[in-house]
Structures are given as structure tokens and as C-alpha cells.
Length: 361
Length: 244
Image (tube, rainbow over all chains, first blue to last red; front, side, top):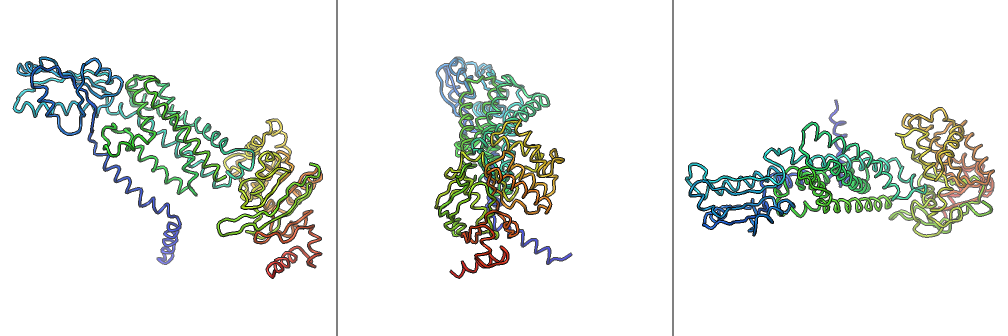
């Protein structure tokens, strides 16, 4: 055992990193990014849940209770009538609708008051936040009330009291699984093409970069198809994830998402000189997707300052579409915006991939 | 092919940052010959091939390949290329590799099958057609790469160091085939740093540090420099260039 020789290996390894500044930056920068983003997003607190309020109360108590809804968990919006408020919840533009009946104040005195709470129950953390905030406000308002004088009359537009946490995050996790595999796969594929001089050999034939990218994306789409089938089946069969919508549509969304990810993967790997550099891009894609997109907790739990970033990450749209299809039973028209964004993502990513591939051919 | 030169280039220059890989190279490769591009490592041979294939643009100068200005997009199906680093997929079989390149140059499946039989027999790896390239020896991989280059019977073969690591018997077989090809009017251009290899060519171009030092028949180059072999001729030309 020679310390001299061992140290020679150490020196050589550190020298390699010195020559590869990007890797060095990754080693320092990545954990920093992780800690910062995790710290901000894993607070788990839900903020700014859009909640409509229709108050028909002729007395003062509804107003007093609403004054005690403090903090930024709920964004209370006065609304004119219950019917159109319900439509807003159904359209996914609000998470909840609170209706205070006309005789609310009188009923409180009689200890039989109720608030009608119309909920989009497709996200259990949000349901819990809405109900929890209301209960806390009631407790503050009616201090000393031994028995709860107030009942929350819950009506679910989507989901139910039985909607589990796993039901609400399954769509996002399915999309995340597809994201990981398609991106990693295409990164590695292209780096391998480059490493063996294959890319250059291919472009010494009439093959054009766009053809190469399209051909590769098609092959990977076949794999993504299989993968989406496996992941969706696992979610449905193993965890009995609740699906009220069209599974085929969910499948289509996953495929749309996968194609864009392949383009992204090809682009990233083109910017890398070797496999080590290429693999570093993976967490770069993965962490924002994991933390900013509402996969594990609703977008409402992401701090306002980071929220614009959420809308720059494609998984936000794939996750939202899958969530709406699987838990709300929405059709293609209702998730139209998500579909358009994903289509744009596909086109841009494949175009970008072509440009990057051409540049090094 | 007629009398059109296979390759013509005028004052080709290529810079990579501070490095001058090619300095005003002008030459003409007539059709139907074996042409040796001769020079030490780093002389600029591979850069010339890459420019002719349209894989990299020259910094200045012009060139035509099979009568087409570079990049020779329309002529690529008539060009066969064997790069120095072999560039065959190790995770495909020999036959799958050939089929890929056949399809990329627009051959139909029947032609691919027929030509695969012919070229594999020629490079003597017909018995390994179903083997993954990863399981082949270095020499066999080189033969696979060569087979892929002339599968589509191209008019111009650009071979980057084709015979490195090929045993003498097979090298001799390659050379007989090159003669057959040139007899049919095809042009075979190869880079090499083996003088012995270059002396078998109809024409040899000597390149040193991006500069063309001589282009003639090997015999004429030897006569001109008064050298007994191409090795000595090359050294004498390099000395001459350095003195100038």
C-alpha cells in the first residue's frame, strides 16, 4: 500500500475536474439549488386558494367570521350568486365556494348554523386547507363555545371525502416517471451517437439533422408508449388510483409530453461534450419538475415568488391535464390549454433539437 | 463519369482558432484512380475529407466533389465514406449496420440484401453477419466499416486510414478490389501515413502541416527528390518546405 501512489490518483482525479469547469460548477451549484428550492417549496403550506364567498346573511355573524379568516391560505372573493359560483368551481377557476344562508346569524344563536361549502375535492391538501381555515376562523369567532355551533355542509363537485392523497398526486407522478425516463434515455442515446463518431458518419450520408431527430423521436415514442402503458396500469391496478375520466385521453397527454421531453433531452445532450456532462442535465430538468409543478402538492403551496417559474415548466401542464382528466373527468376541450401548451412544447423542443444537432454535424 | 474530375479544390484553407489546419490547398483528383493522401498525424488529411463531405465548411477557398460545389448534398448518395474511428454501431449486428447505411443512401431492401452478400464476402466476414459488432475484433470492425462504405457501389470512396490493423493478406484483397473499382471508373481516395501504402496508389499527394508539398505519381515524386523510397522523398520535401 503506497500513499504516494494513492495520492497520485487523487491528484489526477482533481486535475480532471479542474479541466472540466462545468462539472465543477455542477458539484457546487446543484446542491445549492436543491436546498434553496426544497426549502422554499417543502414548507407544505398552501397559499392563496381561490375561494368564492356568497353571503346572504342578514345578520352580522357571517361578516365577523370572514374577518377572522386570517393569513394568506384563502383568497376570499365576494361573489354574487351560488349558481354561478358553483360553475366557477366546476370550471376549475376556483377551488371552493362558501354560501352563508340568509338566516345564518339567527341559526347561530340557535346553535344550528351551517355553511354550504362547495368543493373541488380533487386535491386533498386543498380540501384540508379550506376546511381547516374555516374551522379555525369559527373557533376564533365563537370563543368559548363548548360544542361547535357551526357545521360545514360539504358538497363535492369533484372528488369526495374518499379522495386520497395518492389519488391526487398519482397523475403527476405518472407524468414525472415519463419525464425522467424519456429525458434520460434521449440524453444518453445522443451522447452515445456523438461519442462513437456516429453522428458525423450518419451526416456523411444524405441524412439531414431534422430527419435524424424525427427518426430518433419516433423510436423513443414507441418506448414512451410502452412506458406510459406500464406506469398508468401500475397506478390503476396496484394503487387503485381513482380515475373518473378517459384513460385513453390521459395516455395521449403522456405521449404528447414524452415527445417534448425527447426533444429536450436531445438538445441537452448536444450541449454536452461527454456522458458525465450530459447526465448533469438530468437533475436540472428533474428538480424544477419535482418541486415547482404541483406534482406532490398543489401549485397553491408554492410561494408566489416562485409561481411564475412553475408556469415555465412543461410538467405543470402535463400534470394539470392528467389531474383534471383522472380526477375531474374532464374531456379534451376542458384541458385544451394544457394540450396547446404541450403541443407547442413538442414543436419547440424538436426544432431546438434539430438546430443543436445540425450545429455539431 | 466521363472526364469530370472526382474532386477539384482551389486554395482551401481551414482554421480552428489559432491552428491553421489547411493552408491554401489546391489539387485535382481525376476519376478512375487510386489516390493516396499522405502525411503524418495532424497534417490535415481528415480535415480535407470532412470538408469534401460537407461536414465542416472551409474558412476560405472552393471545391467541387463529383462536379458539385461543396457541401455536395446531391452527390452524397454517390460517395462512400469510411471514417478513421470506424463509426459502426457496436450494439447492432454487422448486417443491421449495413442495412442502416444502405437505407440512408436510398437503396431498396432487395438491393441491400444482394449487395450485403457481395460486400461481406469481399471483406471476408460473411460468417459473422449476425454477430453484434461489439463482439468483433478490431480488424473485423474495420472491415464492417469498409463494407458499409462501399455497399451502395459509390462513384467516389473516401477512406480515412482504411488499412490500419488489417493483416497483409486482407490488405492485398482490399487492393485488388480497389483496382477492380478504378477499372470501372470509380475513384478511391484514401488517407494514410504508411508510405508503403501510398506507393501503391496511382497518385499520391503529400501533406505536411496543412500544406500540399507534392502531388504526382509515387514514381515521379521519388525521381524528383532523388529518393530511393517515398519515406525519404517525404523527408526531403519537408526539409525543402521548412527551408523555404
